[in-house]
Image 1: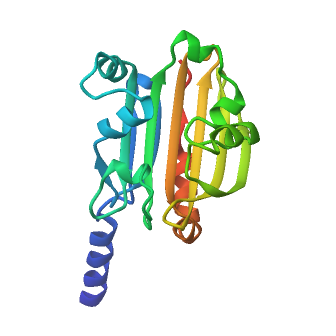
Image 2: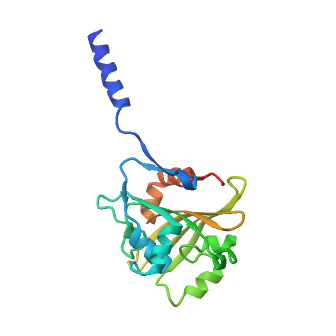
Image 3: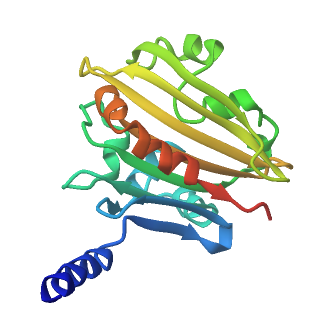
Length: 216
């Protein structure tokens, strides 16, 4: 009986250990997803400045900060949101999420192809236009899915490979949604080397499919 009680105590202790996931949410933007509990949150200001094309000390950066919400979680022991953008090899994954208010000119060009190309060029026309300015080769489209997750939302999930200047193939898993009037963008992006992505495919798919937006 004593041995059974000890075993029971061990099982109870194990069941009360660290949670499997961290649940990330912005209640105001009605946006949610989950990441493994041992991933680390890291600041996104420098990445947001680069993606928005704004100088961190400019008025544009201040406007961007008011109209964007973003968050990043990195599986690296030295978390850094720059792992999303670096040309170096990323052998562990990083996830970045953003909710952004779109201005009038951006709203006028919203389309499924615009969503596919929101981070890197994916469509034939976008890749041709970027061929002379971006050092990326070896493109392969792995998955392309049109999403209608809830009334008032539509978008795409695309998974694609690029060989970076490091010579290593990397995989990008992007979910991009807009509301029906095209005024707000919801983005989730996962990146790691293709070898990493394939080895951790189930884990990374769990993150991507957990991305939930409640239409306002």
